[in-house]
Length: 58
Image (cartoon, rainbow, N blue to C red):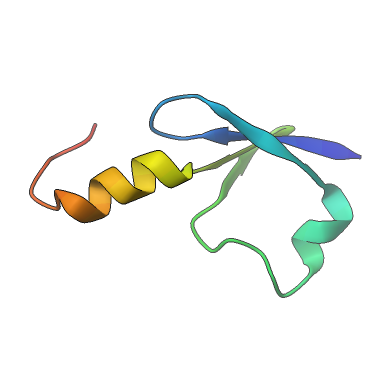
């Protein structure tokens, strides 16, 4: 079964992953899974948060 991977900050579709891949040791530790959607951070949002650590995101 495929799970859609979406950016938690900007809602950009990052890609899709197989449900079997979630049981491997290469899982993103900050990925939240809700139903058939896996929320993570896209590279652009991750870079922005690392560059400006004092910004507060809600």
